Picture 1 (tube, rainbow, N blue to C red):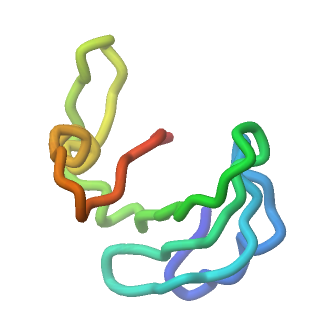
Picture 2: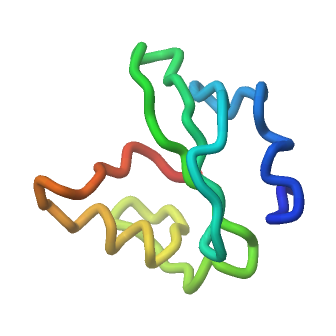
Picture 3: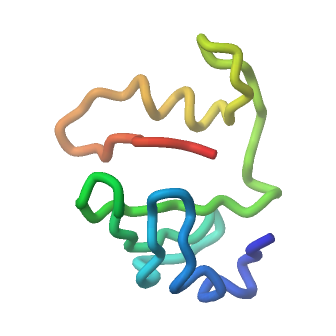
Length: 88
């Protein structure tokens, strides 16, 4: 498990199709990493939430258990917000 005390531990690791390259920022709500998506050949930001910030869990439309934060963020359709690509 990655904790706030060791945010650099993921650098160089592969998470699914994302290769963690560097830290973009860190705070009380988690760490954001710069990560190339090796499958789609694009660079993305990967946010890792600490376990105590996962929040309330619920089921999405397909029956998968996800964070309420994830469900709320995918409903936002604004030009100045980032798009959620995946969660896990």
